[in-house]
Length: 255
Image (cartoon, rainbow, N blue to C red):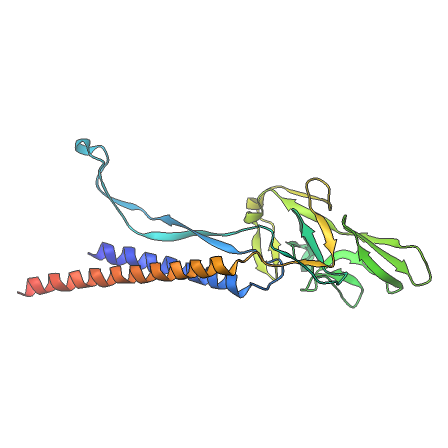
């Protein structure tokens, strides 16, 4: 009887985590380039009441519940929205922007809502630099499909190159570590990386004046949260059923 209680409780805890994850996806519906997460589940150990093959039977194995094995980022491309801002850049295809974190670390993002800091550095929303600096005597700054940053000097007529934005592609982007702020850090699970200018070595091209929206589908997430809630309710009824059976067994003993 106690086995049923703990098994159902494991199901309730797993679905609670699932609902937490779905809620996080829905909360980031409007986060630029956000990639939704999925919870993967696996069954727990089995109690072998009778091993398979014993007396020519399939055996008797009773499962002990479920647990969340991992959460996985789904790196499908979100919809592209036009903004008209030259510093908004979307990636059409594979690849991520590399930014410089404090202490010399690197982070990666598909959030192309670039801004300038007080020194003219081209940065992501968190203030982390892409390694390109815009001089204060340059106007009409443009970012090309290959990531080349061009600008026209105030006293000039011809555009000059100001820097190069490169993209990085990972063998397994799902292995990247989310650190918040639409940023990811490399882990060994992410595998080898390829860094080059946009459009080379299988990397995507850049589209200035556009932003990639999140890949969260509201309808899919709402269906998923309803399913998770129903599963939670069913597991709670299993707890109630086991408790009722134990109560009746206790009454038999008293009688």
